[in-house]
Image (cartoon, rainbow, N blue to C red; front, side, top):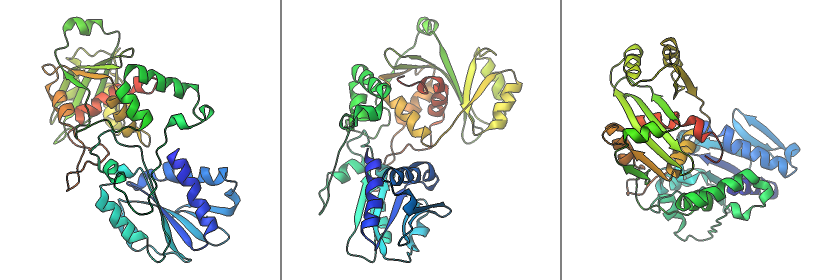
Length: 375
């Protein structure tokens, strides 16, 4: 409800204060149109003010027609636009940081505020986010530092009318509460119940026996394409929905192997034409090559926020069991994968795109599972 609240308050402030303009920020600019811009369009419509505003995407702005006041949308990955920012009427007195925890720390927030909030005595700052799991995340610590004029509001799904959520959402929440209380408290109640910088705190390294593997009802195979210096990564997994346990029991790591050569080694893993492989959709030529080699391979559909969603799905598993003998590279990646930190040592949200090739292969392999609600 946090984003819905902010996206209603900002247009109302624009209407009520003829000198105020607003800037809405996300860490990465290419996420704006399908997230906060769409959210603000919805909010203005729900407020009954749609006809009072003009909506443009190039530049990405929402303009209040009676006065020309603007709501402008920017990503922090293009800071040059902020330094030269000017408005024809009034000043920029409203700044909304969406997904605050994805920014690079308090220093980046201060720099943006100093660049944007100029020319007026009255300012409003909205900072919305889901509390990251680790207590030491900079955004969690930032909110606990009292500042003049600050209001902290923490809401959960329990504060929303049930009809807003639907029966499926509520059932999913109650199911997770039963099978993984810690994950439920974080994902549904916003409790920061982690302590360190490790992304995965649910890892168990142990032997997965031949008998266990033979007993799996279904296995899931995934590929992350690579050549050099990034490797080609293949994994084979199993999942038990009743316990929310993920098992990773086979891997293949290859450097400087073209598609035909890597395909031959995958076939030696007893992968047949009847086995579906899920792979990164970014390399359609590689997917087409593997189809020509006789594999049943499918591209994993990506959508805005899909990395965050699938990583949180992995974090929400009750247990991720990895056989360190069968999968030494996979075990190293999962154990060593940590959140990035600011210069001051504070943890930044977001998942680093490095040393995560088998993690990605596992994410892709589980595509048919995590796309099913409640799993």
